[in-house]
Every structure is written in structure tokens, then in C-alpha cells.
Length: 129
Image (tube, rainbow, N blue to C red):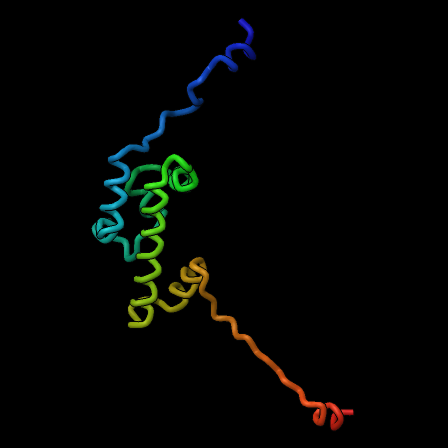
């Protein structure tokens, strides 16, 4: 039998069947709405969600990128928003280690860089000459 012909005729995807289904969405909502705390976590994370759902982190990333799984993408956006909100609130209340909060918030686009602007007048330049 010709392997090339057999490969072209196959319509089903290779690999394991996906675990993604309605129950995954329900479990993800549950995790975001507080099950992460029951799992012993302080903030919801993609790593924590992967453990909660019993899938690897790469699967979470792949599901988030999959255009056919828009509901999951929306839930991951909600997870990240909740994570950011908790980090800011607890960071301001000194309930979190500031270094760790800053490190995680950096992934949300926050930074502690300082913009310094120096203005020099012509008179100052003449005095330096």
C-alpha cells in the first residue's frame, strides 16, 4: 500500500482526540471564579488552570490560539484580567511580595522604568563652552 496515498485520503487529525468540550469551559469558569483558591493558589494562572483541568500548559496555549475555541479565549482574557486586578489590589495593600507582583505585572504591560527629560538652554551651552 502506498503511504502517500493513504495519508492524503485521511481526513481525521493525527494524535490524540482533544479533551476540549463544554465541561472544560465550565471548569475554566469555576477556576476563575474561585476554584483556584480551593486549589491553594493565591491568584489564577494559566499554569494553575492546566493543573486544574489536567492538561499541559501547551494545550492551554493552543486552545487559546484556536479560532474555533473563541469562548475559551474569552475566558483566558478574563483570567488574566482577574490576575491583574488581584495583583494590583493586594500589591497596594502590601499583602503580596512587591518584587513578585512587579514581575508578574510586567507580563501585563506594566513597568517601573523612569523617563528622564533633560532640557538645556542656549545660555547654559554657552557657559559650558
